[in-house]
Length: 299
Image (cartoon, rainbow, N blue to C red):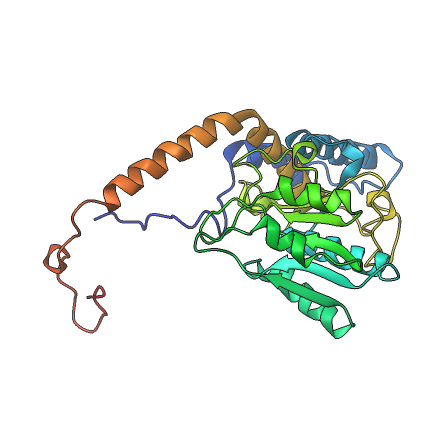
């Protein structure tokens, strides 16, 4: 037995990569300026924010100006879905999603229902896979948004995002994908996926918790959800979280650099774990005795 538990909950959150910590350290200990300030202290942190924007953009294969920094995947999803719903409500009030989305998507959709929007929740098959033909049948003249996760956080199913995006693009429907579980693990090239909006969360790819990003294709208009100053191109007001933005940028740089190697490593680990799990099951007697007053393993 080990003295420490083995952490296997990486889909919930990842530890901080050492390179990420080192990249962040100067912005914790030394560089504290407000990125909106015109003096040298502000210029230093503004340069850091813009470098991070370019690092995130490189991972997603988009222009840096198409990246908005947020507080995480939940805010990115909220901004994408609510921002489109409010911006396009005069064109229609129908949204398509699936029954297996993260609450950061389904809760937003349920809230929009209270405002008069119609939400279609599509089923998935026994593998958690959405049917492209189901999406096509669900589309109406008043459909303004389709939002489907890229990779499922429970079973790992990778959805046919490119095919659904092709349907959406052909009909002038905005397409959003929650890529919190796929960014850094499999390719999330927005040009290949053909999405209009894509959400990522820092703490899923070895960056800090509390920071994320939203890709917004150039020309896609979102209704602003908060009022304030002109940060993030006027789309997300509030002083930038420089420390964590730097961490997210570095994590995306690492993910981009090591994507192929990490993907192959995960494939090997998956095969290894699958092989172990297919071995004869442990007997109950294989477990050490349980001390009095504490629950034992399930029988």
